[in-house]
Length: 366
Ligand code: M6R
Image (cartoon, rainbow, N blue to C red; front, side, top):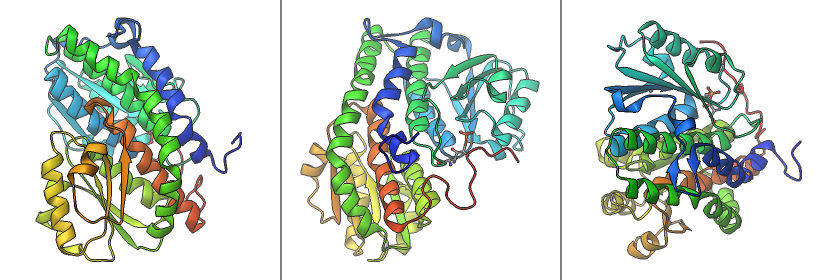
């Protein structure tokens, strides 16, 4: 049931404040601002030498953001790849590593094959899934449900932000178990995560009219480039994936620093560049990449926060200004303009948003 929404995707985008709060309540103790040992302790992070993560599509991109978190907060090296490559790379694996598989459906064939590969190498297997009765969940040692509720739209939205919520909680738990973050840091991080549902609500209410107008303009272009640095880099790839799968506009996500190693040759007035840049420790660097775009007549859609908007004087096609948020929640908050922009562009173009051509919700062939 779509309720009063035109598409499941629209409904699922708007459900995010509620579902991420369910996910969060499962993994953290919101009264004491600590991780919940029962929910996060199914993997013994303290004794691990490394973590391997494998998934496909949007689930892979959430894993990529998870890698930044596990490495930063838990000093735990993460090996990550798309499942269709992971299983053929003959990665040297050992039993002092654990493996995490991320899948909304829990049925993705390549992800399942990677899981079986890791299982035969003797690794402890964890699954971050939405469907708890799925094959991937059944074949895992530890199940981490994302609690997003059924996701019907082919384009993954709420599953992504719930996967991120689970990964952030696990990275904090791993940091505590490994002694790489203090009790005070844990409290601070969890307080920041607790702000997420309220912030998401505020952002959804604030930006949708602006995004709708912008989508109308974006629908006139054939190619779009997304740039980001740090955890905004996987988000840039997620933005490009979302746009191409439902609007059929060609889009690419790049690490902002890679711009001058190739894609800058494409910049002209016909290719909008969406720059995802909260005012974080990467901001100055990303703005200098943005300058390179502006200097070549590129049209910029700047997704930033109040501080970032005030700090940059570059001309833009649009600036989407979000509230200033803690670094750990920025991927979840910045997902919202990215999803809405893809959604409204597709609606404006009249494509089948919930059932885009050539795609299936669950990919059960390799
Ligand atoms: O069910 P899974 O999470 O394993 O699915 C993985 C991908 O097929 C999926 O995320 C796909 O990329 C989405 N259509 C993206 O919106």
